[in-house]
Image (cartoon, rainbow, N blue to C red; front, side, top):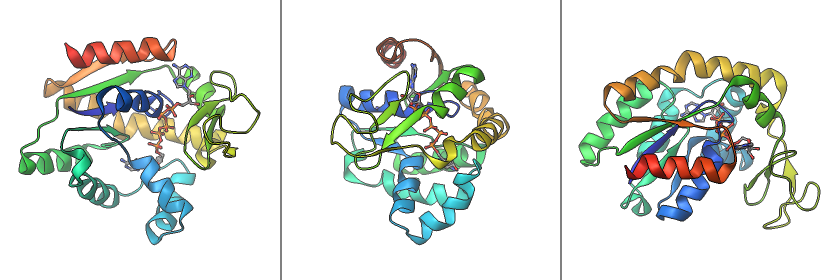
Length: 214
Ligand code: AP5
């Protein structure tokens, strides 16, 4: 199963992708996670991406397209994958189409997770992430058992730099300008399914599974 999770920052793409990984046994490919890993390791790619990410802007298409094309060639992608946060612009989507046509591996579905801006701001400003294993938490909606410690590995929880207020506002604007046009792009290809992204996390997962299996 080859799918894309589309949706604004904070829609729950990363949260739901982890449950879909468990359910279907296919990898999550998150360009945001790949870029943050490079940043943590201070690679040239990570240092270059940092200035775009901290301000809530997009990393240049040429950079992320190269990352994804390489990742799709890895052996764990043979059974499929969940693209999370890619594509994010029409040129990225067009390059993905070309790469998938060459590999003769068409997309199955694109799930567009829909959440209003007010809820997105509340989710992003309260998000915390484990520095060691990247598990996601929220100060209100998904609390860790011990404050600032990961339930799974005991790692330190931190707030992403781009989850500060100015960067959140910019990310929402960038989403509308650059990524929302992908809704029409994939609707015209008959691949898009809209998912109500508000409510309990297991209910949203059930909506996604239904959309994928029907
Ligand atoms: P990326 O990491 O992809 O960030 P994003 O798209 O902004 O998405 P988020 O991770 O913020 O949100 P999410 O939808 O995954 O929400 P989550 O599940 O965590 O990208 C970061 C940056 O990298 C970009 O700004 C850009 O600079 C760069 N980048 C990445 N990809 C790129 C690309 N293709 N091209 C160019 N640049 C790129 O949930 C959020 C919070 O809400 C969590 O705390 C969670 O616990 C909570 N939550 C989730 N679901 C619910 C629910 N149902 N109810 C209550 N709370 C919930």
